[in-house]
Length: 124
Image (cartoon, rainbow, N blue to C red):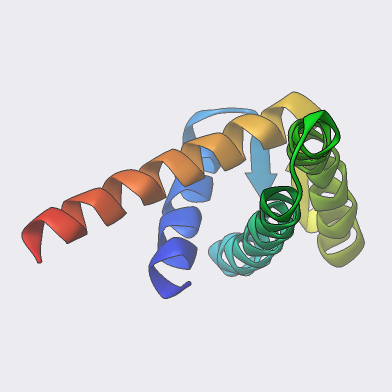
């Protein structure tokens, strides 16, 4: 969680400085946003894991359909939850220009986090 939060704060900072996708009022807001996004991402991944675990206990087409639709629905709708929580907590301090952009930010954050985890495992 700590490394993820630090990665998120760096990625948000870069997006804030070099794009118009996200705008934060200060670095304190950027760091707080990183913590919130890390917690929301962890929660979404945990819920996806529950769906996968449920589908592994059951067999057949119904279980596979639940797995595919469940993971897709969580991935899709969680971004709306992310936007809602951000607007609720940060109001005018954070501006994100659209649904697709939050998706791009989260994908970049997750990708960088996975790359760093892979490097860490190889070095350990």
